[in-house]
Length: 312
Image (cartoon, rainbow, N blue to C red; front, side):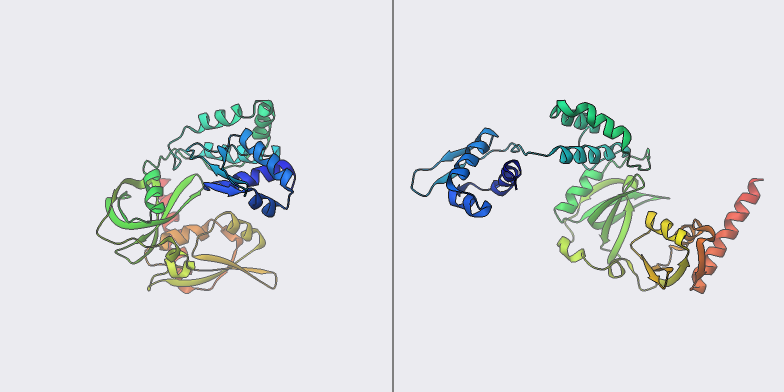
């Protein structure tokens, strides 16, 4: 690696340490003593609070510093970070207390010579995300409880206000919406909540939290209930594109001899959801190997047909 890459890596390597020896740098980066000394001086110029310790071992101490140490980025890395930051523009809420516009301005202030190029790249390279006006007021609290592996009580407004005792272990963004996946202590299984429907989050001391690693299990173990129904749906090549654009943890795509099949399951109570999902495939669905699912889709289509007839 070149010197700038090496200095950047050194900053990360020394992060959190309170001391190091010159030989540590020489061995880690396969450099001479003179090069290691020059690198230490360069690190001091970059703002790393280093001081020399008395002794023959070439030992250095690092002063406690609560400020983030400067990190060197290549131009391509800077552009990538800027574009990634712009994707936050599509979300009404983020898990952090920040002004997205001000964050972008601060980033641009750090690279004034590249500001014009940054603006042009942002105008040309667009990562489309569905925009929603829905605000997730409790998103930051949800993230904090998840990081602490701490159970909480949430108040969830759908058709009526209900409360659940849960432990969140995943937050994801899809189609401009935030979703939180949590272990429901009453059900004993995972379930997904729309974060904009969570009106309040409170600490819960009645149940013990579980390590996040305990939730690293296959989707079938996490989401499938005892009453779940399995299905296999054959789709066309165009239908495969639909699948990649939108699918859920209970589904997986299997290719066999040039044909495409969605294998999955749905729980009792999710009939309307699963029917609506496959209806949007239209005639890209070839076969449905589940009598129960076929009937669910037909029932939903009849309901929709009646709805539009009544509108006339």
